[in-house]
Length: 316
Length: 242
Ligand code: SF4
Ligand code: SF4
Ligand code: SF4
Image 1 (cartoon, rainbow over the protein chains, first blue to last red):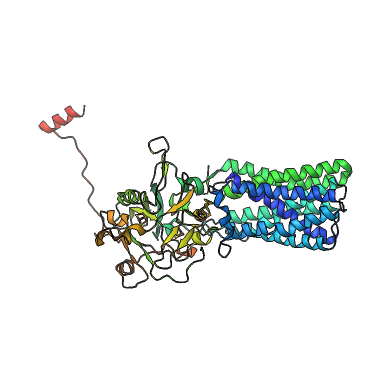
Image 2 (cartoon, chains in turn green, cyan; image 1 turned 60 degrees about the vertical axis):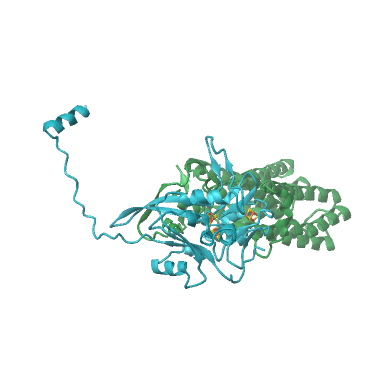
């Protein structure tokens, strides 16, 4: 599948933003968020900043933005519509939570509960994002039990990395949080490896035989319907070169999971401003790594249309 | 509404005969010609005379080679929308632009609602939807709704353009919900196949597999080896092949 920049940025940034919001809800309930309107303003600005940047990027994918409001109408059947509704509805409790934290200067009473509801809505939003891909049967690499948990896990993981960096920067880092964040990074790493393993061993269904209805024997494409590119090939026939895939997978693993985990452990040992800097760097590095991970999520996915064109999963 | 109708009154579609299709592309050009002025018009072409021509087509013909233990053959394979009974291309659409008609089961796009998110093209396993970059909306085969119900056309012409154009009669149009319709009977008799049935889209169109070859065995005696000829002919031959 063609890895469109707008969608890669959208899913990665909103994943981190909504993941952060979910954790803010949890930390609020646990009483781990610092009092003080300024701290609230900084944290919520980063959280909303990530979400808005992502949502803005997603509209870049549309050719008729003036009709985008229609995307809120078909939530009965469409996961994309559900995502749009959830993404926007989340702003009601999230806005109240931000008002409470910034305006009243502490996360207590109703603010806490607004945060909890916002957190749940944020989780629902990430879930709907994952379902858009997981529900597409023609793309076998997405239509697996790994996709939705992956979206939730990477969203929460990057959200936690950002939150750890913020709390450390504000001087309110709960004890041992970098270690917890590092553990979650490792969990993310293993989930990604498991997804890739599953992808490599998945039965390649359907076959060209069932795609063409020519039941027996080997069926080989000998002539395409057209001699130059078309929409189908550009959008769904994208193939990643093998050597690029190897390198990008290394970058995704190093920057997205292992590198940040290592930096977090170092930060725990270092403490002080040096530790904060490491944590900020870890969060930024992870976002870069996740962009690569998300690019690969698209680039490595194959569509059944490639059966008609006789294309393999990757080019050499 | 992108929720699917529970039942449709009729289920119009095509039976495509892979035995008689000769890959002449007549249905392809005829579809383009009709539809570029039809319901989903235009079928935009980008850079048509340049280096990289690209454009919207509703029907494309592939060519395959099928090799089994006993035979090998060339098969031409037209690919257009199959007007599925469970089309995820419709249910994934966030705007309500894609819909399936309750009256005849035809799957259409309302161009005025489409935001161009392209998700429906990802959801179609058969590659039947093509995006028009120029207009910024998704387009697809309409089963020629502007022909099959068109009272300005003589009755025998009220069939899809691709069906009318096919010189070998490889494309048949009709109602698959009626078990006694010509297409239903034909599909039954010829063992019509549902493409990628395992995905559960329940396509309406049926592909009629190529028939077994009429002649029993293919043991045609090999041509004799060409030996150099003598005489006048041989002399001319040598002269000409110099
Ligand atoms: S063939 Fe594709 S576009 Fe046509 S109805 Fe089926 S899923 Fe939709
Ligand atoms: S591209 Fe248009 S028709 Fe297709 S899913 Fe998006 S809004 Fe619906
Ligand atoms: S039914 Fe009409 S729109 Fe569809 S492929 Fe045939 S000619 Fe084209």
